[in-house]
Amino acid sequence: MAEPQNTSGWKRFWERGGWWRSLLVVVGYYVLWQLLSLALGPIIAAVDTSNEAVAVLVSYGLPIALGCVILVVFALTTGWLRELFGKQPIRGRGWMWIAVVVTVLFNVLHFAGIDYAQAGGGLVAAWVVSSLFVGFAEEFLTRGLVVNLMRKAGYREIVVAVVSAALFAALHAGNLLSGQSVLATGFQLLYTFAFGICMYLALRVTGNLIWPILIHGTTDSATFLFTGNPAPGAISALAAQGNIVVILTGLILLIFIRGRVDAPTPAFADTQKPA
Image 1: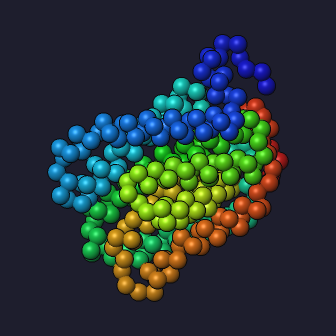
Image 2: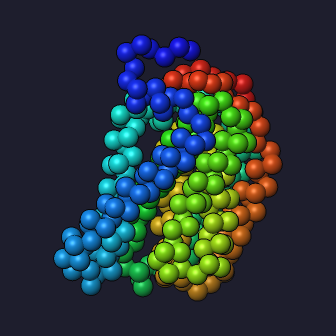
């Protein structure tokens, strides 16, 4: 499909898609977000964070919420906001529900295994809200913008899935700079790659970006709260196996991804054959 003559050079640049434009948008976001976080430093330092719930909202939730704003502004400048939240151009298959079931199941188990009396209602609410911002930002970036860019360049779906998951995992390599050990970071990269595959399949089978955002957001809040406030019992013991199960699920299901979306696709309007 030919591009309209009145389309700006900025929009034409991004409409061509490709893996390096995907890398560019991820790196650009990460750098802008880090700079924004540094700029927020004096504001965060001025807030009394002796209350743990306030600390989570201000130190964790606020920076990522502003990161969400960066991504939405970018999508508005390219005219993709409606496109990203539109119906998927390629239908999912029944087996893809496995990724949704596994991730949601362990979210439920993690929430069920939290000692709520120890955590307190304020902290629970703070993690849920902050983690929804994280889910929005990271899914909008990788399962939204990156997937869109890769499909516009005509890559097969297996490549789209791997690149979006790899860039999602790479975002977490920055935790080395905060003092996280190499071993812990390596395991986190493996987990986030596999989780990224699961979220790509969730995007495919549910047909809308909102669902990976919600699953991701509840995964983070459930995991953080469970890790800091585990309740004793069999449920907690089972929930603690979640990371390993998600890794195995993502890596195994990756083998079965097939198909492609015809390029270029200025809007997610044409329904393609199921893969």
